[in-house]
Image 1 (cartoon, rainbow, N blue to C red):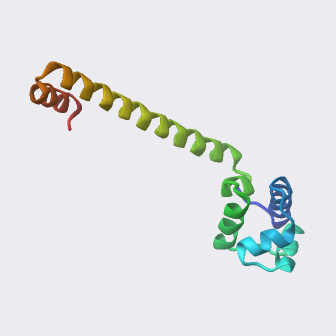
Image 2: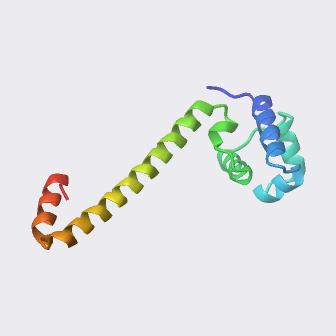
Length: 120
């Protein structure tokens, strides 16, 4: 998807405003000048990838949102949350297995079976 400089500028201005930042704050956070930030927001100047990423980080907005890829940004966020939940579930299961092993007194046997089942 091609994003015109004016579209990108409008998105950046909107995100900056939503983040409660003025142009000076965004400029300080990104290393750009206030004038450059203004020119970007008016669509008079484009951004390099490092500048785009710096703005994204400063406003705590996914770069995909600035580029108009909200659906992609949502999918990435959903995948990240799913991975986090999977790790929490795995940690809980590990804890339960350890508790069962401690109760049975046959920890080495159960441990070998669990490792065979899960390929560890």
